[in-house]
Length: 226
Ligand code: CTP
Ligand code: MG
Image 1 (tube, rainbow, N blue to C red):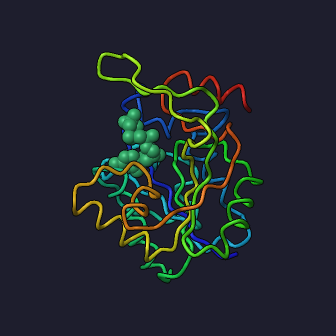
Image 2: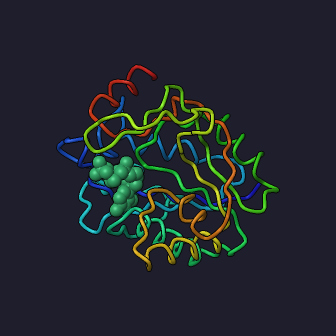
Image 3: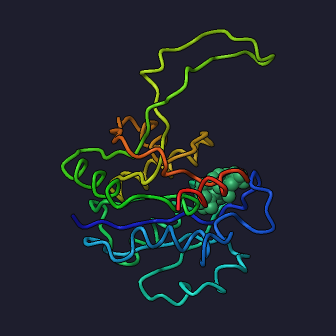
């Protein structure tokens, strides 16, 4: 199945509290983002891959993969959605059609298994909307008020954690993201923009170890996973 990939990598990683954006932290012998890119490069069906980088990014040029001809660059933006939108515009420049599939995957999620990637592509190739990798919530969920007092225990079986890649048609995703940004809507992933546009993305159950590095302890988890 032919597909394109956008890797938003223009975040500053404020929750990580490191000396650099988390996608550039060392993991084994390379930077974290290089492991992420390796999940896609060389996959059959990959039409092209774009990384979205902050304008003042001084870390990317130092990486070996910066000279990899298979990787194209786009600018970043204030919000994640701005960065992804910029990546989608770059794909169009590269010849992508509005009807083509695009996979958006966090730079900070380096442990995507090839089996999960193939499961996503296989499961959604004939889907009218698209969808995302997700993991069923494992713990009991509590809803609480601002004081931390429990107000409800919702039915856990209805809740999933949204992972990436998230896979949608280029034209529909661009429209959904642009509309959401224009309205100042709070969207933290591509699926929520699609939902806002009236679509119902499909959840494809993935592995729980496809974690996004967010806080310092996540790096320890990753190191142990490898
Ligand atoms: N991202 C981006 N452009 C932004 C914000 C985020 O491309 N304006 C990217 C990040 O680089 C990351 C992914 O989106 O790969 C997921 O975002 P998140 O985990 O929130 O990363 P950061 O925004 O960098 O971290 P934090 O929220 O802790 O500052
Ligand atoms: Mg963020």
